[in-house]
Image (cartoon, rainbow, N blue to C red; front, side):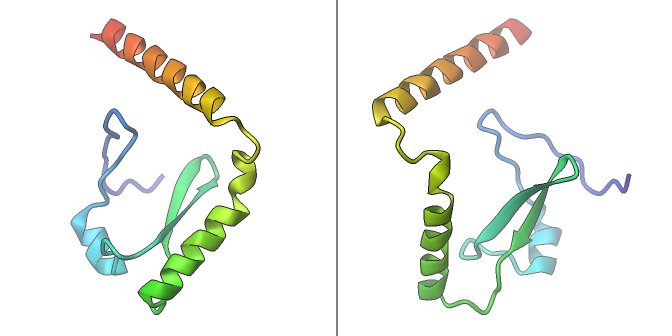
Length: 98
């Protein structure tokens, strides 16, 4: 295993991409990132930097359309209730850990 930078996600599951990685890959707040699961890990790839912001937006919308099946047809109320239950459960687990 090639260890680079060790980090830990915050309570929302967010991580910070180290600055030296962002600089080397040209990742700014305007760059879209593709996240995929590979070999038990997460692989993050910046999308083509030559895309204009208009094209980036269209590409992003197209990706949303292609992944819509993961939530398409779900009742928003049921989804919101499931999310609330999941968040409450996670909160209880965190409190027990302390």
